[in-house]
Length: 501
Image 1 (cartoon, one colour):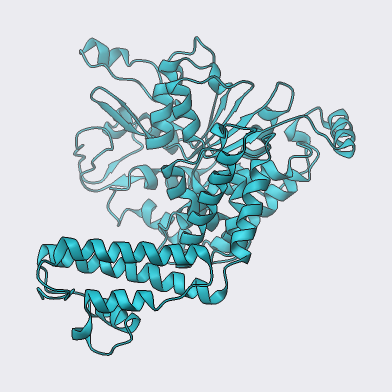
Image 2 (cartoon, one colour):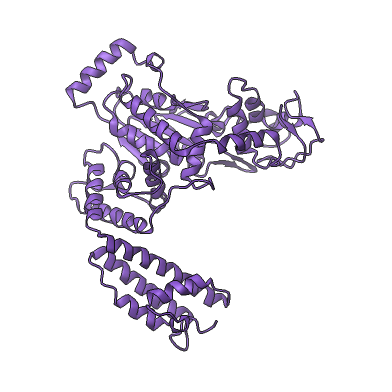
């Protein structure tokens, strides 16, 4: 029984005032009239846990004392992130080794990292490569998930994605879509033949994929969508399709199986199963609440558990990506357009590293996780072997950085943060600086006196640093440039970094 005992503010409507103690499930009740999704969720008798979870997720403003929210919170406290991650990874491995989809080990690895990051994956390849079967097989692992499926064509209207116009609203002069059962309400999506869609449909799709919201005039609806897997036999390039491609961090180019054993395995499996995933032996699944919890852990939305990233790995990852892009650019055999990595993708990259870590049973990102980013940041299966190139460059960079240089990277990054903090405090005229910031800078300058911290002292300390690796040397120079810029911005009289305090 879902009982609401206070005022409720719906996500996309004005506040709704409900009398104390009203039954939310009452037919014709005020909430069910205005929230078709809530009505559908409450009727999911086969999976009440799924229903309560999404009520908590999308109506998070329900008072914390609400019995269903409390039940979900209590349930989530029993979840073990490492156990869920291990079970999810094991299930993916069992699928990869099953008789349904054969010879796609690297593709499963890419998908396994993509979904827990709530990102999207694009599968490209000629017809007949079981792309659709692959997507359906993957989604079968998440129990209770609502999957929106559509085959896109040039004639696919926007309404097929976001729902038809609400006629009753239209009669009142309100232009609004009824999103019930649409992509907006789905947990996951299967977008078949993505690039057959017309530009108008792609425009709406791009907003939902990236911003997780649908906006049209006065109507603004938050989308539940976590991830989309899209397929296409061809790629067409224009402004809208390039924007769509950028929404898919993980891209895989599929080609016919090259290994004879894989082809024989595929033929024998098809003879037995006919591509019917229902005929495969049962594989342990992950429930939607468990999967969402795993996603929240990776997104750092769970206070009780986290996957940590050593500071130096952020810089080393940037070095790897830069060297990879330089390598692609210098390759005269390709223009490298498919290997482009946007700033947005760079910013999101370390979430994939965290996913790799927890899926391998670790709570801290390691070098192997940075190498594994080749599965997602580089297009998998491309004829120019971008994934292999990325992983080779990552291995070379990481093996060349000694422990002492990694410690130095950590110190330089911390110093850079502290310089930015002091610069901001000086500009704002604040006198309440965290003493630990001053202590760290004093330690870097090898002095015990905070009063001895000057621009000149910090600059001298930087020059006394002698990295053994070129990339670390370049980082030191960048911090020196940042220090000089900070001096120009805030110091007009002398070299005292703290002169105004």
